[in-house]
Length: 140
Image (cartoon, rainbow, N blue to C red; front, side):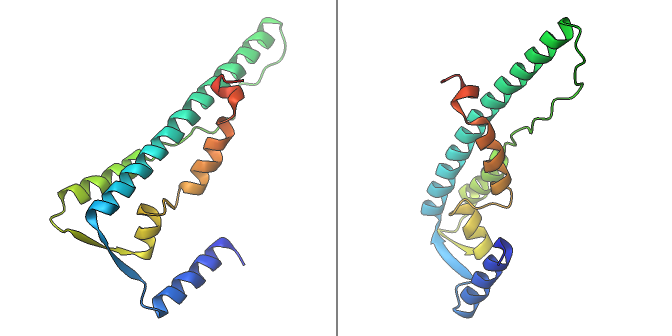
């Protein structure tokens, strides 16, 4: 069973149990989102640093080959890490401006805001982990 099918089955079960919505304390939700934002931003900045180091390394190899008269590629195929901090900032700002002390969340919102399981998360983690090696961060 695929990831989406498993998620659908869990959502159907929870809906039958009356768990499709949950009320949470705004202060707790805000604290969790702020921590998730900090963690995401740290991961992004490390990935970006690793990406930049890999781009420089690739360009230096291309330049060395060009100086030797070798045939060189005209394209460097590296995936750029995507910063999703604005997703966190938008929800944090909405909560800060909300007059409610309790916030009602759907399962999908709970997954994103509390569990940090956004639609883009898997792709982000995959890309970030590519550049998180000590080789590209200058630690090794």
